[in-house]
Length: 399
Image (tube, rainbow, N blue to C red; front, side, top):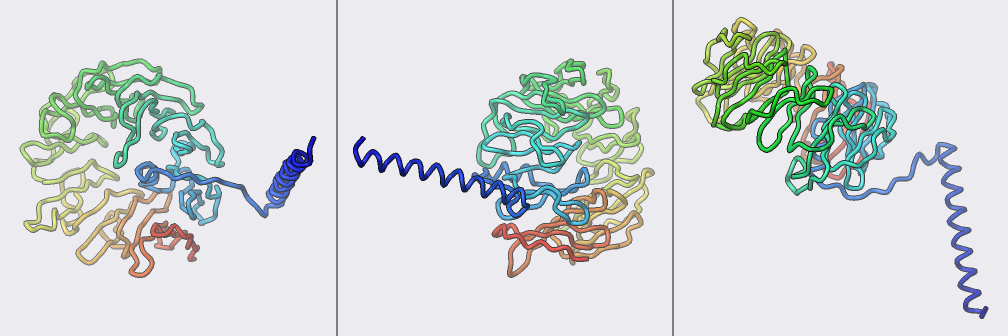
């Protein structure tokens, strides 16, 4: 062995010793709690991050937030429960959260551990113990789902209920989930059986024992008519409406000749067609709207189950009630009202989500520091906030 080879071997040995020593130091620091974990960040497609984090509400007692490039989770006191370590992750559903890693989707548990490995090209949130997964789809900029590929369902262990074979799927509800094959929709049961054949041009998940189906066009198109089927697949309300929403406690919003009203489960109109906008009931109140005659859009308010106007048509925009509260927008700004219409919180936030377990996600634009998002409780107390402009962590718990 000549001197040059000897020197080269000695340098390799020194590098190995230094790497081993560095690894030992990291392990010791992690054991001491000084270094929590080492992460390597890879760029996340904007649509992927936006899709997963689009509604960062509290669920399963946890709310996601962002620190630098990483997402983690806090509890209702603003305390970090799962350290920021994920490049893109969704809110929890049934104790599992969709998570993106190196171009694939999987699921983490409420401890931040991988429960189902990232092996799918797109996923949906769990509902009634099952989630839709896509294999073979391709993400494209500006999209909100993988294009192409096939969809199936997995259970909470990652085992397939139905191998990927559908063009699209929707969530399980009341034991059934819509699926699409060759442009037609049917329903799959929790045994993996196609219990209602694929004969409809569109279909929604079941609610209150019935599901919206459409013949002659997609749900939001101007073609075709909507009706309802029961869990046995029987058409109980003949397709006759231009649009239909979910039944809740026996009433559903439907549109005919450009106006909305409400029907019961026999198809009888119980609240006449008179609204330009109408939504399903939530906590016995329904959000409705009429054109305001100006360029500002509809004026919206709330009716009860008899059609009586309980909260006047005085808002520019509003959300349905959840946990006794609803977000509304007036000409002067945003506010939170109770079911009597009383304003209980007034804020300058521009974006909101519904309250969940007493916590709501909000977003605000500041003139000097950009756009911030974070959480408030029912009293308006701020939990952790962070900025989207530079992703710099600015979170504080303001008691």
